[in-house]
Structures are given as C-alpha cells and as structure tokens.
Amino acid sequence: MSSTVGAAPPRRAATPARHRPEPRRSSYRLGRWDLKYSPYLYVAPFFVLFGIFGLFPLLYTVYVSLFDYELLSGTREFAGLENYRVLLADAQFWNAAYNTVGIFVLSTVPQLIVALLLANLLNRQMRGRTLLRMGIVVPNITSVAAVGIIFALIFADRYGLVNWLLGTVGIDPVAWRDNRYASWLAIAFMVDWRWTGYNALIYLGAMQAIPRDLYESASLDGASAWRQFWQITVPLIRPTILFTVIISTIGGFQIFTEPLMYGHGMVRGGAEHEFQTLAMYIYEQTFTGNAEYGYGAAMSWLLFLMIIIFALINFALVRRSVKGEQK
Image (spheres, rainbow, N blue to C red):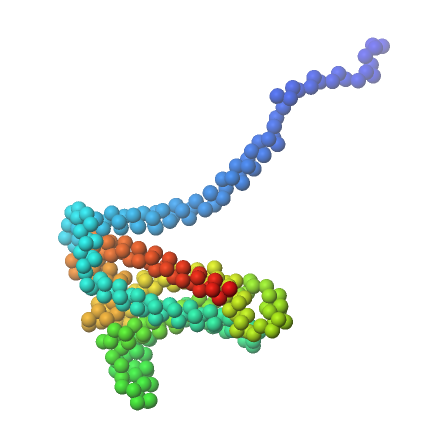
C-alpha cells in the first residue's frame, strides 16, 4: 500500500491579505454616505418645489416690476425704477396700506390674546373638554366665501342684525360700509371669528407639552392660577407665540377674501375705498382696467418688504414683552 493512505489532504495556500474581499469596509463606506447625504435627499423635493413655485415667481416679480408691462395691449418696455417712483406717490396705494394696517391691528391683536386665554381654559380639567376642543376649529373649516356672505348680511346697513340690536338700545344705525373705521371693525370681527379657534388649538398643543410638575410645585408655593399662567405657561410657549405672531402678520397683510366678500365682490372696497386692502388694490391694478402687470408686480414686491418689516417688529416686541413677564 502507498504511504499516502490515511494522510491529511494538503492545505491550500493562504490568500494574501491584499486580495481578500472587503465587504465590511464597503458597507461602512455606504453607511457613512447614507448618514451624510440621505438627509439632503429627503428634503430635496421640498426645495425643488419651493424653487419652482416660490423662489422663481418671487424673482420673476422683481424682473417684471422693472418694465412697463400691460397684459391687454402686450406693451413691454423697460422702465427701470419708474414703477416704484410712481408707486411711492400713489395716494390710493397708501390708502390701501393704511386700511390693511388698521384691519390687521384690529383683528390680530385681540385674536391672539383671546386665543391664548381660550387655550388656557381648555387646558384645564372640565366636562366636555374634547367636544369643546373640536368645536373651536369649526369656524376655521367653514368656507371663507360663506363666512363673508353671512357677515355681510349681519353687518348690513339696512335690516342687518347688528344695527337691529343697536336700535333696541337706542343707538342709531351704523353705515358699516360707508364709514372707514366701522368697516374695519366688521371685517376684523369676521377674521377673529374664523381664526381665533385655530390659534387657540396651536397654543393648546404647546401647553400640553408643559410638565404638570411645574404647576403642582407652583401651587404648593402659593402661586395663583393667574400667576402660573404668566410665570409658567406664557414663557414656556414663547416659541409658539412668536410663530403665531409671524403667521398672523403674513396672513393679515395679505387679507383679500374677507373684505372682498364683505363688499359684495367689489375690489374697490367701498365707494371711497374705505376698506380696500393692498391685496385688493394689487388685483385691481393687475387684472382689471389697463391690467398694468409691471405696476402690480412693483406693489407686490413692496408688500413683501412690508410684511418682512412688520413681522420682525412684532417678533421683537413679543419677544421683549415675554422676557419681561418671565423676569
């Protein structure tokens, strides 16, 4: 018999280290790429859509504002800053700006204050709390056109509900559409009715995140419910308050549908433009009459700058007042 019977098979030569596959190293590299670049891929669709439907129209508006551009005649001539020069001397534009600011103040300030107090009440233990929380958002889901028509009837000069109630206490009827400040009040009441519950729900969500231990400790120290509200609740939901202030500022300066429906669909905003807002005036100049597209673009860009300025002012005022209460 051969001497190799029963011998162990020969071993294979060891593979050099440089020729071995490196699956772990490849997986590690892919994992690093995933952690580094996947967040950008997830948010990329938003920025792409924003660039197409947000940033491009904004920049194109600046471009169009530099032209004498009429939609009906097709005239398109470079005018430089002429549209802005004419705009700054336009008395009707500043009248619309005055109306917009007035309606904004009358609607936004009471709206956010009432929403904050309402949210604080709904944050307590009470019967039917869930039903009440659902009920406060009902006005917000109502059609704004329907709301405008109903409130136009409520504040009607003749046979309106408000004037009838005023007559029962001996007050003369109010010309709600012919008086500037009366029309502001009517439109502000409409806006407050529709958006107060929405902001209250936002505040309520922020209040739910506050630990209950803070209120229990404050109660043991003898702090009243009102003091707990100003010393605990308001400072801790400050970011939410700032958010609602900025959002309300943006919406308040762009108000269009409510005064349009209140004026029965007329963009003039009353016989003497008593409640014509900036958005209504932009629409009137851009899409009616001579359809001055370039002039409307200049007004839109100036409105955008006004919104930024007022939003920053409100941001600074609210932030300072909340800090003062916290101290």
